[in-house]
Length: 116
Length: 112
Image 1 (cartoon, rainbow over the protein chains, first blue to last red):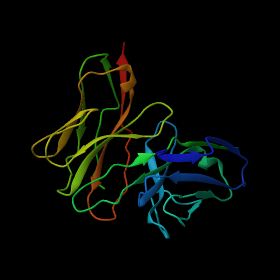
Image 2: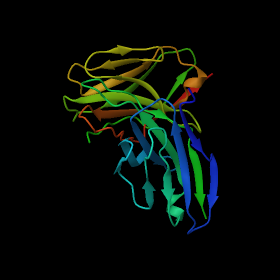
Image 3: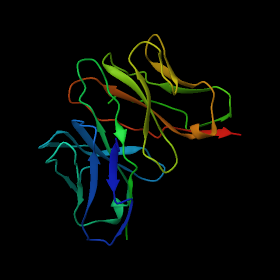
Image 4: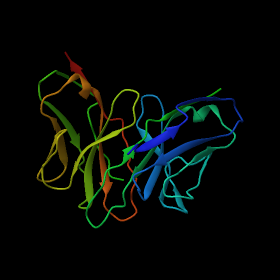
């Protein structure tokens, strides 16, 4: 298994440009997540999805959009990029929790985005 | 979300045990205690989790206080590769509440 893969690894955007960060997992996980991490800080949840066709906002959703048309893919769209979106973006996935069993999240390697 | 408190940084020597503390005095009965770590320039990596009893796996041990208001992650024999930021996170088991809320964690330095 490749696990969770993210592309691109690095990207520089000009203010106002748009882009899509790609995330794919091959573990057949129901749940997928997007986090951002600013320098020296912990991760913050942007959006998450509990299955194909279902998405929901996390703590910091403004300026982002997501879609989940398949179990494997969960792309994150940035419209009208702003300097405040300069960050490292991590995608993660996990199996659906069942009963009183808690499962871990598996993280991708991240995309380092700079907006200037 | 229930909050956790961890020291900002800790330092230890290679091949010695490391005890990383976490306080979570407002934990609820349905909160699991999860530990993740983040090596430099990588995504977070799951370490261990538990509910009430102490837990062991190949990476670490988790000791949970009887009142569940604190826990300790134990690395039995630290190596240089264990230098990372360690996050203690409470995660409700309620169906659908899948979010991980990351604090600033403890930055662990391992001296050769």
